[in-house]
Length: 309
Image 1 (tube, rainbow, N blue to C red):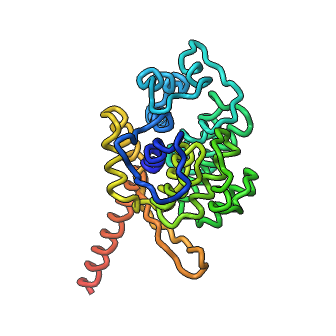
Image 2 (image 1 turned 180 degrees about the vertical axis):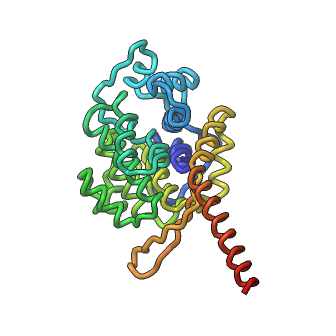
Image 3 (image 1 turned 90 degrees about the horizontal axis):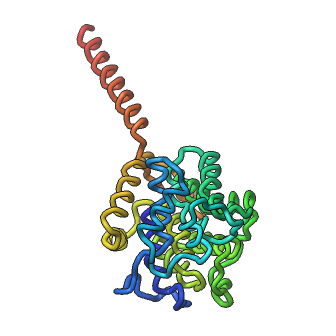
């Protein structure tokens, strides 16, 4: 989920001062996390520790009441209500906070279902739900080693987004759009067109509009696809800007979802293969240990039998 936080922080200074180029400094003295990061970490906390998602989000809202750029007016009101209800939003807030869901579960079905669960507490409009589900699905598929073309086809077929545009065409006329339907497809296209994690973030920010949220969504997907190729400077800067409590949840979440499995992925030319490395869950580690012990014992038994002969 570092990728989503990085996108948010890098895009934060350009949200109300759009820059229509990829050539910009990644960080400045004004760079800081916004409500996107706060609610992303709130969802991660809920996944780790359970409880009532609404209360967890309200807790984070009260602990961090004045994030850079502020909360949306309706969401801010929801954060302070005693008995908050969903308000039929189709805004991109559901997609910006969902990245931990894409990392947390081991089946696509559960990923999609829980993505809806995180959305409907506020964004119970079909577009709000769809934006969260599409984002979480893309992260899950990237994490499992699927190609960009596979991800593009899956999202188009299941969520109806037009992903056959390019960033150069979007950039010309794109303006601030806080809807899921006007943000999630563009964020996905930035990822699909990218050549690296950093390039994905630069493409997303260069589109303009709601820069921090665009880059937050793109960054979450790009992290899953490019995995451990997030530049160290970006990773360390992001962690340095978080306070101790936020950093603790991020590190706990990362530790909880370590995976080290090898997934071959066909590259876009259809001829070469890249290797995606992912870390195993604790249960999978124990299974690997058991299998390793079994193989060692079998090997020792074979050697003993050979000596007897």
